[in-house]
Image 1 (cartoon, rainbow, N blue to C red):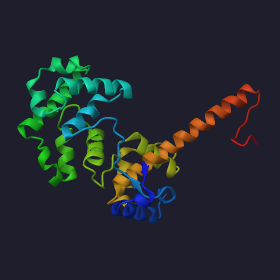
Image 2: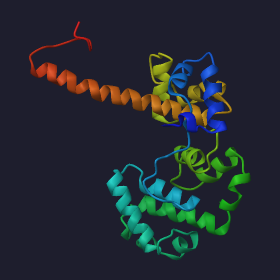
Image 3: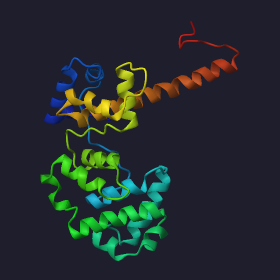
Length: 241
C-alpha cells in the first residue's frame, strides 16, 4: 500500500472518498490512511510484457526474494534479455530447468507461452477483455490459480474492481476489522466486498496495508516483551498494568 497524499490521481481520490464514506469497518482505516496507489506491486524486476510479469510471478512463488531474482535473472539471460512467447516455445523444458525452475514451474511458463504464441491468450486484446474473460483465460493455464490471475489484473492491468476473495491476508484483515470469531471464508469475503464496488482493488490494497500495519505493530511489541522477560518482569498488557 503506497500512500499518495497530495499527489493522488482523480481515481485515487475518488476511491478513498467513496470507501471512506461508507458505514463500514474499513472506512475508518481508509480515512486515516488517505488516498493510495492500489496498483503498485513494488516489483523488484523490470517487466516489459504480460508474459514477463506472469513468468516472474510463477518463478517467485514460495521462494525468497534473493532466490527469485537469481532464477529470473538466469531465465531472462537464457532468452537473450527478453522473455517472449516464441523464444520460450522454441526452447525445450530442460532450458527452463537449467535456469533453476522446478518441473512444475517450467511447465507453467511454457504453457503460458504456448497460449500466447497460438493466440488462445491474446495479450494484445487484454485491454478490451472483461475481468471475467481474463480470469477464465489465465486459470485455464496449468499452474495459474485465481490468486495469480487476480494479482495480474490488479497490478499489471490496473483494473479498479478486482477482489481476491481467497487471499488469506485479505480475509484475515476483514476478520480483524469485523471482529469475527474465525477467519472469514472466501465465499463470505466475496459477499462482504460487494459494498466496495467499483473500487475493490483499492479496498484490497487497504486491507493488505491494514495487515502489514498489524504485523509491524506485533514485531515492535515482541522485543519489548522479550526485554521484560529478561529483566524478570512479566506484564499482561503493553503498559505493564
